Picture (spheres, one colour):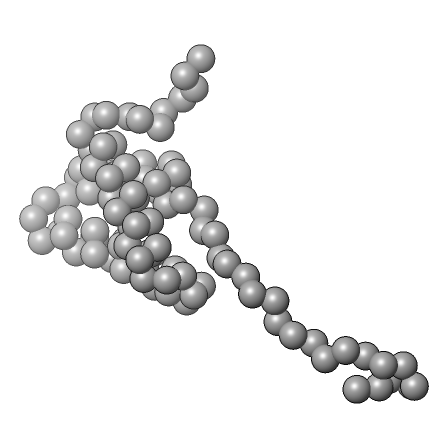
Length: 96
């Protein structure tokens, strides 16, 4: 290809990998989800949980993340939410 007599190489997309922000570190979302789940029971809690996880899954799928990574991220998020619900606060504050 030439542009005003200059040779211009063909453009090629470089391979890339999307690295998501770890879902287990989304502290605000974890706390809010645990707060809402703590106030709901039965089908209401199940519906809310499916809505949260479904929304996160959809966002990650649209971003092009592989299924195995999506499942790993959602599991990390679920573990953090349930730790918050159980009273364990592994991500609160600073260790110092």
